[in-house]
Image (tube, rainbow, N blue to C red; front, top):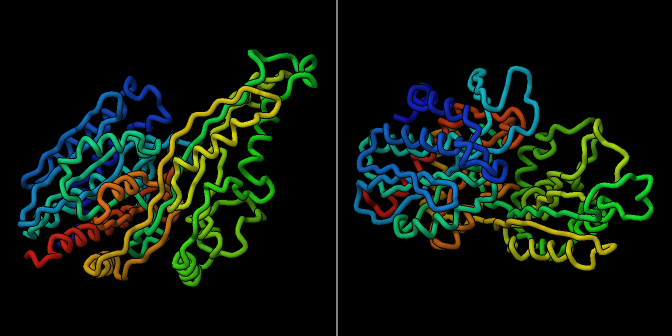
Length: 467
């Protein structure tokens, strides 16, 4: 029998709600994460829940490497003769609240309204541990023989997964021969079918600081003499982005766009219309980037972009004095096409920021890069399995789309296991608000995705005719 919403409520929901009360911010947003203990509290909770499940031949381990966030590794032995491994991936670290949530909602005080659960991290990606194990439980409860499975849940994804490669190296022998990789951290355009992600952009952050003084000075005596750090930052930013159009100016951030990507974007536009514009909470009358709905989809999935996500050294207006500030810091978030080397692109941006600096101001940068990913061609068994899984769980065949976000795990695994098959899917549909205020998990979708994943795992276990 497939998992029902009642089953999910009985078996997982109370623990998921407890998890939602933990801040467990990703290390980028909590430098004191070890001292604060929220990541440890969350991983211990998930581990205890995993140990309580009725899975034969299972092992639950919290793996820790010095100076890195921990990972939860749940290994379930094969019950058939297959020597390949299925890996199911998720993460439990969280983004900050972002701002004030709507009335009656708060980031760490979970609230259920109908079939929707509101709290930070429940959809991105707290549900994943529960979904992965409940999918596997379905197979065992039905007496279906299955291949070996490793569930890997990390705690640094929202920081760009800086700890992930070290763990993949450490666990390489344990993972064994990985032939199927299922990622539960992706998005969905709608809640009426299984959405399978075909590509993800790369990402790198550059924190750039421009210094002109050792301490602030009265603007009446220093302006006109000392160049403004903000003005110099603007000049440097003009090297990176056309301020009129938003076009990124660094050639290393561009890659060729496959014809099939444009064709797929046109198909999505034909079925759903201007989907990217419709889901944006824009102010009235805002003119969007991209001349057509198709171009906006391509922009979001295969074009480089720059977003200024943070500023430092600038007082808030209510305490701003007449002072020429000593420095300005900006956090620059770049997205790169799936086929671009993010490290090489990041190095080009750093050169642009630190070469021939205006007025010889002092510029310093810090950065971290993660590559994008695009899925290898699906083998016939998997293509058929995805459609069957979506039909059974949602009532219609699966759909495919590229996404604008980044999941470093997929690129890392693809390099290590070039012959593996990949399924990237998830519950981040309309109004899920990942990284924003009022993050929401649609519970029926979590159940349906779990059922679909279970079906794909069964198809993998039977791909060679194993009963």
